[in-house]
Image 1 (tube, rainbow, N blue to C red):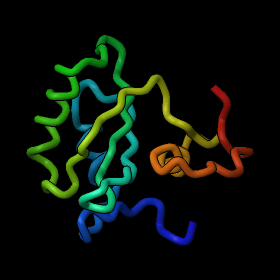
Image 2 (cartoon, rainbow, N blue to C red):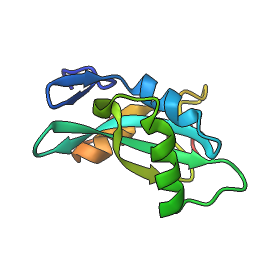
Image 3 (tube, rainbow, N blue to C red):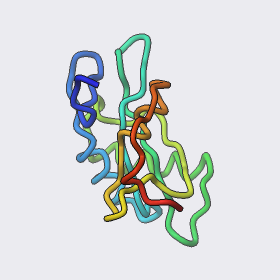
Length: 121
């Protein structure tokens, strides 16, 4: 793709997904997370977070607000996700590494490419 897929360029400021994911994983309800760029007409890109929840928690608007309030204290405004999408699972390699590239391609409506290393659900 000719770019570092892990860096999110929001309004000319670079944000890394790792700090976002780390803050999300600090939330009691969050089991796994992935942060990716999402196209934005004003800021070029914004941060979008994909989240799976731990057993005993249900995705809801209230839970999203709770998560946002939790991470607001831990992240700069530029790194804050503009959207949280609750998912049942995140795409992973067979060794268990989350594949952000697939999520980013979904956001940018780009072809995903080779999925031979992706673990089937």
